[in-house]
Image 1 (cartoon, rainbow, N blue to C red):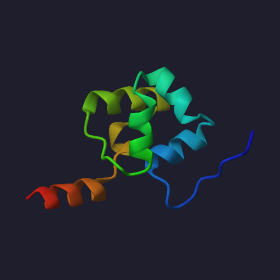
Image 2: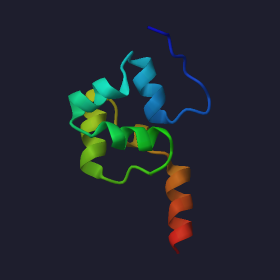
Image 3: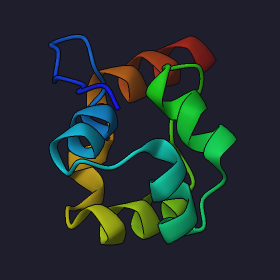
Image 4: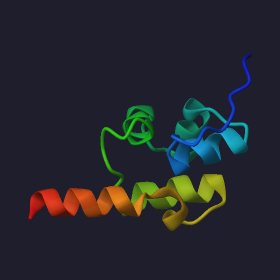
Length: 82
């Protein structure tokens, strides 16, 4: 099994997964959030907006929802919609 290191361009979610020695698959199983959803968040294809899913992931990772989301991306998405 290869060792993954934290990089600057990773999402906060990815950094926490690596720091806790987990995989996305393991996080998906423990949180009940679909793996595909976690992958889209990790690749910044979708911004996590489902508060219940964010809450479940944060409970497994032992952090707050604010630790997972990226405020800059949320602001950019809001600006696009306006």
